Length: 378
Image (cartoon, rainbow, N blue to C red; front, side, top):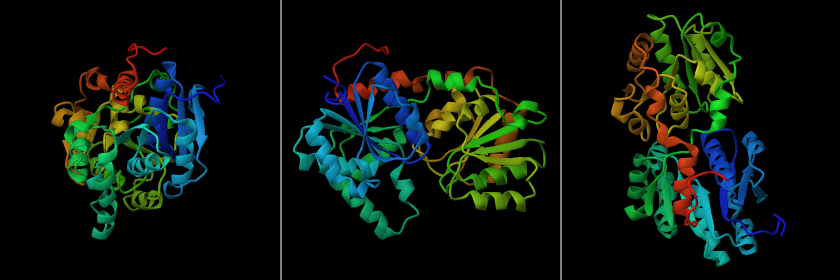
């Protein structure tokens, strides 16, 4: 039987629409499943991501050809009827609701497990009341039909239970599959940025989509405050719709000689490993992968205490400083404190061991209901 006609052990429904943290974590999971010898179908709503080039050969790509969740229902019904996967992992809220409707129409008994990676209440908090209601109403109606929900942090789990009414025992917390051998390998490469090569001054790093959520306005403002006391450099990796606004802020604060926004970088880990400090300035998260990645490379960190995730990772500020969201002066003070008094070598890395990809993948497989497998990749 060829791979084209074999039934999958697992189907994964997702939308790859960029190079963000969700896409990277799904890639890590897919590859961890495939390395165990499992046959995996990646069912794609969108397929616009360079991460797709890194997928294991045991993963079969199936493009629904719809490009939008709203037009994916019938293609997904056809997939379920034809391939009849016994279990499907679904990434993100809209895809989860789509999968529930598709399973009902297809008449299959596919086990549905939804992965949620963000605090939905916080993500919707700045939306008009009607829009929030329209988004939450189907969640309350459809989420109880999902077999199990995986939340990436306790905060996401609590928020999901509150907004959906799903019984707490149907929501499991599983840490993101952040730490891979590939991450360590890429981190060992020489960073291409001149500031990281020369190291004339301490280099601070931020990374993520240039969006409202990541709040790089606060990071740049904090860096401006820090620069009054400490000579340093700031690099922010990523692309997004706030680029123009951020560049204008850099010019207005006269920081163009010491702040750089080089855009999307294929290998951010070489930057992380070489930086003197990594800063997460987000307004909200689920479980911030970039923070965990930086810590896995033993880079000192500072973070906002946003919902959800940083407080859990940093144990309420015991591991590294947590500051209130949007408070640039407090963020600057925390950054200065870590630069002047860095943590003990090895302490960051030790704090994130539970984020190893194979450990996370094993928990996913347990929840998906696969037969017990050896806790080692094959």
